[in-house]
Length: 247
Image (cartoon, rainbow, N blue to C red; front, side, top):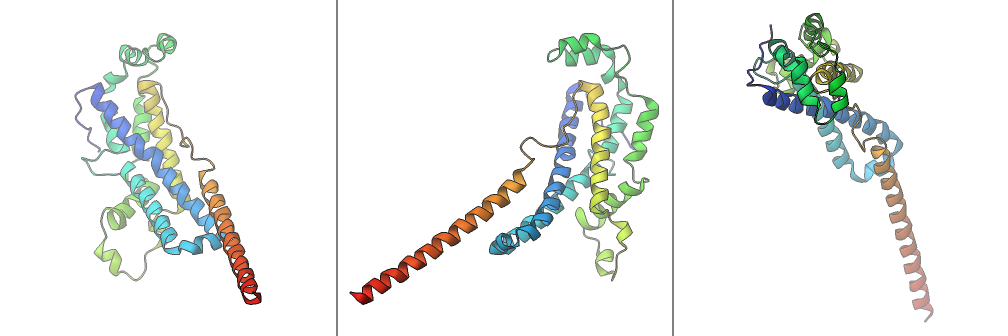
């Protein structure tokens, strides 16, 4: 059973929400970048080959960062900030979701909404909380995979797994499964964030859409322009040599 994090009140809980939200937003963003890089490496192979080492390092770093952040979200350590311990903290501090507490919190930014709150509508449902706790605990098959990755390849490198000749693919999360875990984290987190402060996370970061395509388009146009300038300079050099010989 997950133990709640000891908090002094609303301010501490806000800090927990903010810190956990960073990983919930950025984990899938890094994983999307990794996926898009893999897709563009084939499409822009000429451009990539101009700096193969750099792009290889970027690909590895982005993927590992996404997985590390995802593993933090589903961390099972009792003293860690994770979805599991956050839900346990919510269960132990339901007073934070009382009508007056929510109205006071929401009123400065959205007074009309604060006045329209139906009594009891922001209190977390005990049955839903228990269901969500099961979804973020290692007894869940998908969560168990990311926990296995964290304990053997992320936070620690397992000597036992390193010496094994083969590792069953079923033990590690696939790319699709990692994205499923990201979606699950959004759903669970937003359920309680919206109850607490009437705010939900956005799934796509502002400026993210199209940014990867822009990078590779500029790489292509820059490489083409550089080659054109090189060819023109070579052609001009040959002309100058020819004129010099004639003189």
